[in-house]
Amino acid sequence: MFDVLLTTMNVERVKYIIWAADRDRAISFYKEVFGAEATKHNDFISEISVAGAAIGIHGGGEGKRTWTGMSFQVADVVTGAAEIVAAGGQLSREPQPEDDEPPHLAMCIDPEGNEFMLTRQR
Image (cartoon, rainbow, N blue to C red; front, side):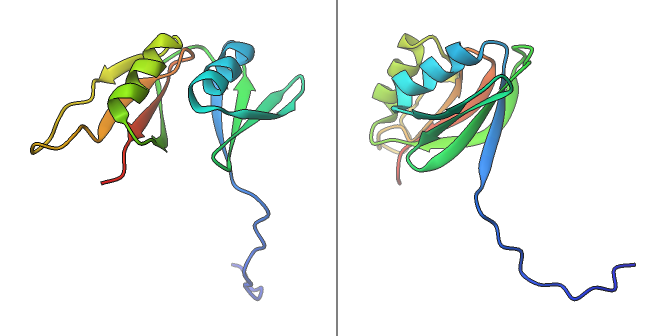
């Protein structure tokens, strides 16, 4: 079907897209909690950068819970989880100690319904 010589595609950038019913609220959340830097904002999409990773925030979301696959590694998951809640997010799984070690995981939800993980290095 494809009789072409396959070469390595030159990927210029990787960006993860999430949906938001209220893009400004989503941007504020990620700025407040993760120190995101807003890099683009127009009528269709906004982009932020967190620790060098590009996240696009697309308007038109319905606010429904959606698993994103995103994970943010922080030094202290308990403190981070508290900051998420203080900024208007929720926890679907609170940090719990494991094998006499500090918690390494919290399952979180941003104000737009996007689910993500908060982890610490193990």
